[in-house]
Image (cartoon, rainbow, N blue to C red):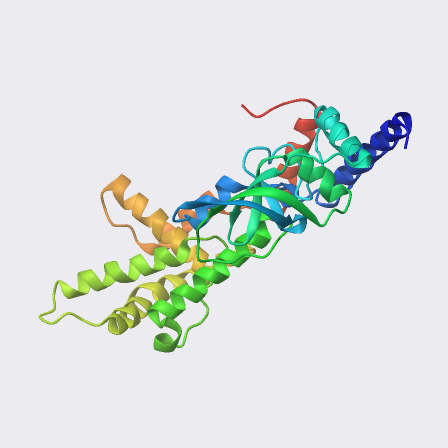
Length: 309
């Protein structure tokens, strides 16, 4: 193909991916966070990898590259370019593909079986747009026990992490068999560690008045019956879950206890749970209408050129 034809075809390719990015954005108008490219740092904060190991050169399936270390604001969750200033670099790489030029390997981080771009975001974007199945990469692995499958949004990855945390918690504590309760479910990672610490704290205070230390089994039962369920019953009786429709009862328990503790520290006195719940509901509940209005406001402010400070 002549250079003029390659240039024209490359312009056409870029227009197509920019249009796809626009369509992707419009399809997720009320949930724009679903179109954000996943940030490696966000994943690291949730998984806390033990260390990093240099793997070296390998061929990586392009579909397993799901995010970026530093350019996650420049591309959407499908790796389509979001901004026109990315055009020249994107065009040059696209033209190199058409000419059969061998491009340098991209540099990737691997964590949990999926990959994040350290260097080569434009090359990955072009490869995905062209349907390339594999790409040469220099890989560094961030060690973690969890195994992830590729997801197109942070939400799909978060669900996998939460499922992994739940399996670990139930296996480590035998909570389900002890209590008959398998309904400790959360919508954010890290909450099973919070529950485990609540149980250990409860066990500690019980043992202060015991000659013989109680077992973990007894501590779990006591915590559930004396701490967890009374809070859950109060949440249910106040019917506030209708204001938190995307959350779980266990979510509300953790958030309410944290809010209660902060009030105690600030006021220096104990406060009845009913009063705490009323204040929590007024402070943190958000209606669906308010969420839609807030998203619309963000979109239009961006279109008008206003940026968040």
